[in-house]
Length: 317
Image (tube, rainbow, N blue to C red; front, side):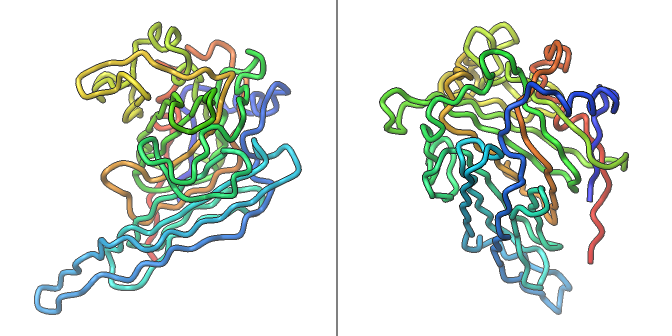
């Protein structure tokens, strides 16, 4: 497992922020959700060469939905999907995801590469994985115009991570609610982070992702117009910033979303072209909060989630 620690803020400051009274729950993970499993058969071993040919045929995805009458899940429902997409060893393996003990857990057996997604999109009862080009089960108006900023008092995501391992990518997509509620004209911003494995440092820690990276066009323009920008121009740890317009190759768009009018929030785990193998992840909660002077948390405040973490290698069974 990998333990995460933020380099740029002291633990004392982080713990104080964790008790900030001005916070809005995205998901506290206090509502359990039974573990779902996607099973993939092993690759083939050639006795003559001693080489295992991976099984690169994705397994069937598993999905799960849970609703709550409480306020621990924004919109009252959490949709989870998980899919094993490759197996680099000969033994059959699993990718699993679920919520228990106030934590979200995403785990892959040794040699298995899997992906997972959480959708916070209201009570649609559909956990089918989707993205910005093929929505699947994402109801982009499901949160009905949720104000992520709580009237302008909140300015960042707060992510409490207990552990993770290997090098992998994580993405957050925010969809703006669409006035005609037909899921076709929603503005969106998707930010993908690199999480790089290094040496171990400490257990659970808190990280922040500044809302300015997702916000209205004027906010993004003032901070460098990252939509569709070449990766080399983005903060360390940020793999890409994509927007619903202006993100064609070679262009830099200025579109963002109105954070006071949100229709859906989606988190993707182990994204990108190269899927990490044997990844395990445990999250304790995701909230929106107020961080003093968030612009001081590096450009857009986005690199902190990835570049500010350290961890250790996963031990094979």
